[in-house]
Image (tube, rainbow, N blue to C red; front, side, top):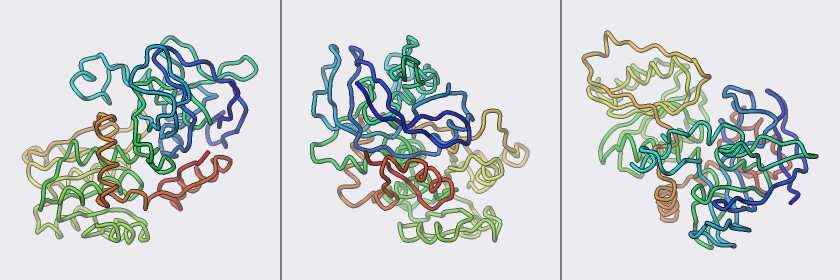
Length: 366
């Protein structure tokens, strides 16, 4: 069928909305008509070729929509089902079957390879193939094909215009806190970065019962917004040393948990030094391949700290996304306050507003 899609053609270049051809779904796929798609920092850095995804490409990986067709082997989804789309995984490797699909042995080719595993691409233009299957979905398109495994069924009355970011950015921040760090009631956490991932992590910390929640950034308005959402303390790292500030807030001990959402080497180093004895820190911020960060192994050797590198919140999407929806419905996870909607035709403005910080989480509405 003919569909509309935003095509990335070159680094630092606006996406072009074009008419493309979409092929038929494979036996294990469903065709989804998109209702909305979040815009994520990863879309921008892939457009700019931090990761070597083939261009031209249809990006987008926070999609939500309605199933229009199902492949012959699909048994758990039906036409008309509402779905949120999640990253691709094989489902059969040792990590997938152990409940850690975000560390699938084929995660990179399945999500960044630009095609299905057999090399076939879903989209074409005048007979020429266009890189597709980004994060298993390429959701910057009015209609796309995804493996049924990637689609999370939600309730018939689910607000699809809101839910797409649960498939990546919101899942990454909240999952890193709830699935990996797991702070308990009365414990402390510091979050570096007040973008969508950082604020989602903060909201998860509030929901978990943590009572010392410190947000670190360089944008005063974002820090004030974090306080509105539940942060107990904020640190402007342009004005003060964040490590010293965190230790002062915690009586010299440091925080039990920390989350770096920036991918900035200096910030990563600050996170490691802000941890209490036997504290646990997580890095989720994406950096260019080959980026190295300082790590004071001399001083930190006796600290007993743990550092984890986390992808997509180490979540099982079909289990975790419904939990986030349930928390939101009860008013315990108000991630909707991070979202601003844009018509699909204004995708490049959404990218620009995300990069400038004007918008925390842009969501395109088809």
